[in-house]
Structures are given as structure tokens and as C-alpha cells.
Length: 163
Image 1 (cartoon, rainbow, N blue to C red):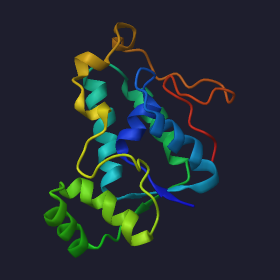
Image 2 (image 1 turned 90 degrees about the vertical axis):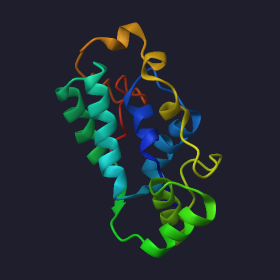
Image 3 (image 1 turned 135 degrees about the vertical axis):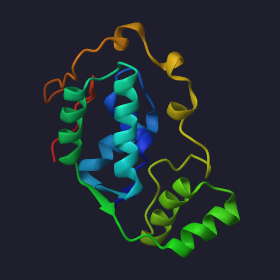
Image 4 (image 1 turned 45 degrees about the vertical axis):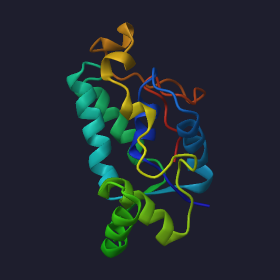
């Protein structure tokens, strides 16, 4: 069964010092199940990568390589949100429009969110921590993205599974 995956999971897939059990589970579920994301996800992923380029955690070539691998995954971008439902969720649950877009998609398609333990409106720990607290000294270098062999499930910058 398909599921909705949050852009914060992509940060965990990309950077070796980021770790979240649910992001790992989502990565493992992609090949058999596939995922669906709201159109907002496309922008969020790129913003995450650009922000980390500016911090020196990844360079433009690494970003391009990661995006190429990400494009091969069975992730479908949904471009038809129910705007009225998004706004109703925002108002009823005090969510941001961004969080409501993910929730609306899961509800409309009757599929689980990628992070079932996350309370609505609560950001992933990856987003809450300050960049200085997350970045290990070895990762601060401007080293290009390295994609390991097929046998390594994680990406340092972690390897995405083949499509």
C-alpha cells in the first residue's frame, strides 16, 4: 500500500549524520509500496538541499546527484489537492498549510502518512534542531556527494534503492 512521505525524511536519506527510524522505514517501504507526496514536497526537498549547500554540508554536484537518484524512486507527486479540505484541516487542528497539505493527501487517498507517530503540526526532529547541533565536523567539509555501492542501503549521502 502506498503512503505519504514527508520532505524531512529526505533529509535523513541524504545526510549520513541525520537519522530517524521512521525515515529508514519509509526508505525500505518505497520499492514495494511506492509513496505519494503533495506538490509542495518538490520545493521542500530542493530548499532543504540548498540550505545545506549554504551550510557547506553538500555541494551543487552532490545536490544534482542526490536529486537524480531521488527522481528514480517510486514517488508520485500529487498536484490536485482539495483546497477546501486543506483549509478546514488548518482551522480545525491549528496546522500550518504545509502540514495540512500532507494530511489532506493521506486522508483523500485513504493511505497512511509516512510518519504515523507524528502529531499533526509537529515538525520532525531534523527540522527542530539547530544546524550547528546537527553538523558533525567531518560533514562540514564541501566534499561532493558520495553514493556508495548497491549493497549499502544508506546514503552517505545515502544510496537510494533502485526503482
